[in-house]
Image 1 (cartoon, rainbow over the protein chains, first blue to last red):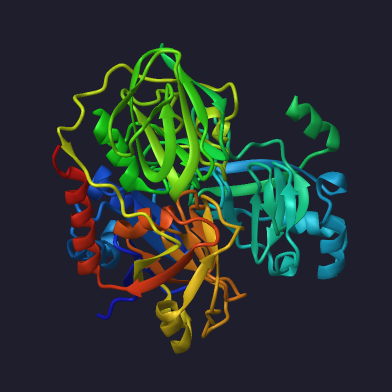
Image 2 (tube, rainbow over the protein chains, first blue to last red):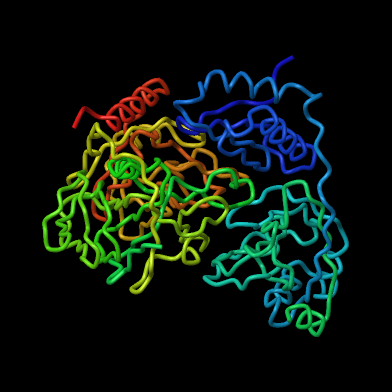
Length: 227
Length: 308
């Protein structure tokens, strides 16, 4: 059987297990299961195991770990279907106040995809999303896939300041900005939920593999939730 | 607890240890020193564990005072420095007396100095680390650079100072040649780009910081134009956006990114890259994994050094 994956070096201290480049749930589930298997097998002798859409990047100390040995171990994990049972992710519901000044791009999104703002909201809130990757800033979850009816590329000019809690869509994905950062996605609403909060016992809310649903909330409910 | 007070912060002075590892899958960046070698050397000189927290000092140095006598060492970029008015020699231990001032005057070479104090700076850990991530505002003082009036407690539990003295990192004079391993996405680029990355000379632009260096020089063309799905971005990655202008990702990089990466600076040469300043040139030389590992072994030997 020919392997359907490749292992690439990213410098001397990281290896990438690279599955066929697809944005889909089976590929993501396999990457997450590999990450779990790597953590079980190597513990702290790997420094980090970072989940991408179709890649797992394993960081190690280049003097303590022989890269050729690790490459063989990773091949074994990637090729072994019995090691690949993904632990089911958590189900998380996220209330969102859509539109208005909290979702300044909602109207434009509606015009560009050819429906009403209410329909955009209804489409966005009507399915369960999977967290594919957590990255960019602490706690930012790349979720998808978004209904193809809302397909839009990123904004041509990114904003320099996107408020924390902004709920956004772009390139078939949706996400929540955990802190004020620059950002190029379309802002359709805002949530009082904090994806990253240093004062919480578990500061990071979303993990790869989690299942997320959005539901609408009123401006008043949003403001009460912030207090 | 004894403490150091910041009288003048300098241009960009941050607290760093060896980085915030083990959380990148949650989007938490590693941060840590731009020059890991000088960080470890400074800690070794004062008898600290390698990962004790020290100050990373950029281009224009600070003025500090201590309320207790303290053993210090300064490594990395070379500055003219005085402690209580006495000149300080780089990469050698020195004592700052209680109430005395440590003044960084002018910079001679390199861009980032490490100041370690015996016992290390004992600011609270965030996610198991004292490194400052300016990009995600995480770490000591809410993840910001130090300001006038900041008070930095230090420990009292250093080990014996090193008996053997490690050698300093060679500082770039106007620029440096650093070794890279090609990849992971070299096949996304044209043959010409793969040759240019080795033959071209680039300049570190003023729009460069702890997150990454934007480089000016020959454009690197992509062979295929489709977007890469975001994946992890190790330190030393040379990523190339559609503009063709490469960006060298440094210590405070984000955990993931979506641009193809043509090559990756080897761990042994990251400290040299970390000592470059805006306006300096940088050239890349491809090497194999075995050369990269051998170079890293040599750095470890240099760090252990010879008998003082």
